[in-house]
Length: 229
Image 1 (cartoon, rainbow, N blue to C red):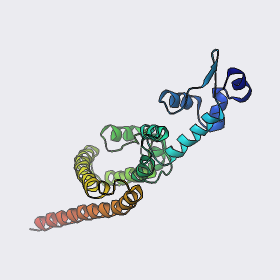
Image 2: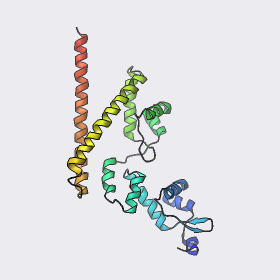
Image 3: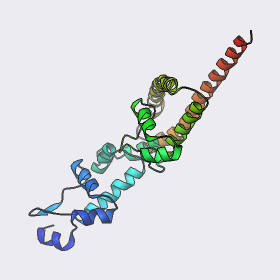
Image 4: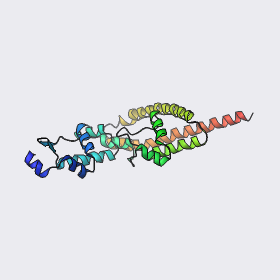
């Protein structure tokens, strides 16, 4: 649109942000990341159109599916259209997006301790925007139960670090198996891959959880039997 039409039909950045339900900084950040087209300019004034409003709506829709901005950029450019559905499945249900302050309020744990957990890699924010979920709140509460039972914080952190390293290794092997035997053979059938992922993720998680719980119980029983003699 030319500058005359832009002034008549377009939006200044503040109005665009208000209509889209985002901040002005967010509009500019999306533009910087290449997710939002550049505006028309009339001198030093930037004018945005209904097309920009549509783009912002699409970005929000993809973010609500749990996609990171890097993937959203590829989806919007049309370079990798299958990513949207598949990565939405991998990201899991979006749920309510929480700040670290929200996690502190929901778990009753001071922000300072939560920041320590983040530094130690035991509480991981999302890759896009550093947000948290209700699952993080539940995990922090579980950790608090161990602290209240008398487990020292430093010992708990050390245990968490070792467990996290082991989980990352097993998760990497599990994803490799999924890619090799499920995703690659069905590479052109995205729906089949998503269906398989949604079916196999809880199965794999249940199997690993069962083995871990069994190992803990077996070890605890052995220690008790040793102490009895």
